[in-house]
Length: 486
Image (tube, rainbow, N blue to C red; front, top):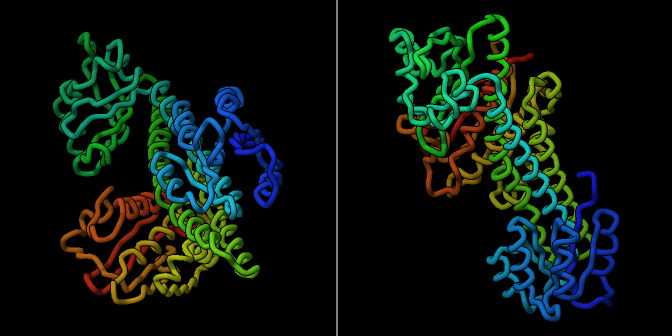
């Protein structure tokens, strides 16, 4: 966003002074702030000024804060709405939060305002990135010259792009939905081979075959297809790419590029959604916890410590958002995306971002990095360390403080990372086969979505590595990650 974010401020009185005035005045360097004092001006500026965020004081003549929120929601349910209220009306403020307001600030204690604004605009930036990524994925899918398709495990077509329909002699993709792709093979042997490859290996790579078009014409194709788990359907599906087999060398090149782009973009979108809902939660919780402390009277020293804590958490959120941006760059830039990552610094950064949780649970973290750094994709390795650390804390024994040991060393020309804890452990005989499945949860006593280990495994495999888990109920868990040295 090259322009300054726009704030529309619905103010009780056009004349005011004090700390809130000083804070808002200081913010004019970062934000384009417009003030209104009446319902008519508020409605007009909502449409003309097109703000990115609303600040609303309680008690404005002719319009309540609830009425202002209702007007905003009619325009956009995603437009952040921050209420400025008094301590005496905090209960009404909580009711407004339930109605859709984003946050509230106590007028007598406005120190939170800069941090609340920064957090809201950071979230808006992240959502915008996701929307752009989804638009790009749709463009890639619809405009791809290769035929892209998605079927269920039995071969029934769930969706396809226009190129797929054209190759098989259909006018529009919708004409193919529900049809059995397995019935289109000219050769029963080819059909049986592709099915068996999917079941045994989870993929079919650059397979030459012939399909029968709608008009009976035979078309020679190269097919790449993969067996994937669809978290929405809760079942396995097949995604694939096919293209006319005329110029072998050029087709193989185009097929590999199209397929690689499709897989990378799908994985990065999953990671993007996960990081938004999971990785940002801890530093945001830190900010909210410190914000509550700021409501109380604090000494100058305590205030400086709290502000430093807020600054650290906000920087952590900024780092995560930058890592997401790198993840979304799904063109073939693996070499340029790699950087040297220091394991000790990474663990210190993660520990700082969840410091409140570490203190509350009396977590002991010890590190022994014989190999101190690695050249890798920072966003991936951060997410791996973060999730494994958080899991060790979440699945701790109720009567024992968590102990987490992280180490690195070289074995068999590979970098080995080891995470060990003294937590509850896992019943591997019962859950081992589903351990890395998407949305698989085995301890319902702990809040979670069952995505952590799935994403960890996906990211490790993207780095050309492997992950294995050893665990026993009541005896903790040991996780071994192997990564190539180069």
